[in-house]
Length: 268
Ligand SMILES: Nc1ncnc2c1ncn2[C@@H]1O[C@H](COP(=O)(O)OP(=O)(O)OP(=O)(O)O)[C@@H](O)[C@H]1O
Image (cartoon, rainbow, N blue to C red; front, side, top):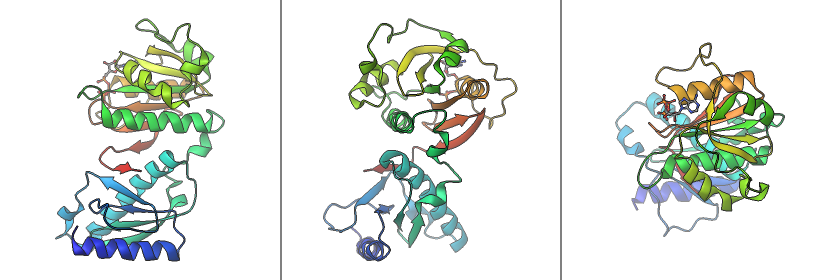
């Protein structure tokens, strides 16, 4: 490990203890030899060194964008809503208040649409699918969770529903043992629909909501458009995993409300 990185991590640990931070989020290379009192979350696949010769403004911009992305994921993966983290970049230490990302994405505000634990589970699962793919291939899919009768009304079965006739216990997305089969069925054409408690009603589902009056950033195709559209006509939240690019997006009321990049990967 570079001496500079070690010094920064030790300083971050001290700072974290002073401000009573929950964790250190490290954008410097992972090192298991260094013993710190504060739990460290390593961000993988990031090379902030490339910015070394840039201006201070670019660096600050880079740091704040990356810490926001990392904290949004941290909140989803650890179910943390408040507190402080200390971020370590190769050229900066940052104290960051977790609640500052609430403008970006605050899961709690969707409690009326879907159970918060189930939503955490769907988001974590979507992040895993976006990172892992299946058998070396990228996988794209979507999870639509909400009023299940409305979701059934606005969609139809594209292929045979593999969940048909199965008990709730094997369809519950909150149970991690069920994730492996979800990852398998994510390869089917179509999407998953789930009730507001996270019980999967079907996969291989085709969405019929009309995406014509939905406005999304350019480049997003049929899956994203249909997901946005169904959240406009039904009380539902949609989580997409893009096959091209691996980004996880969250849709509510016809709009994209959050975007989780897959190049900021936290290893907890
Ligand atoms: N209305 C729909 N309902 C369910 N699935 C759909 C719908 N439209 C498209 N899809 C699925 O999305 C897949 C990808 O389509 P498309 O490339 O147009 O979407 P996209 O939004 O660009 O997604 P990606 O970023 O994953 O490529 C299709 O092969 C199909 O399986």
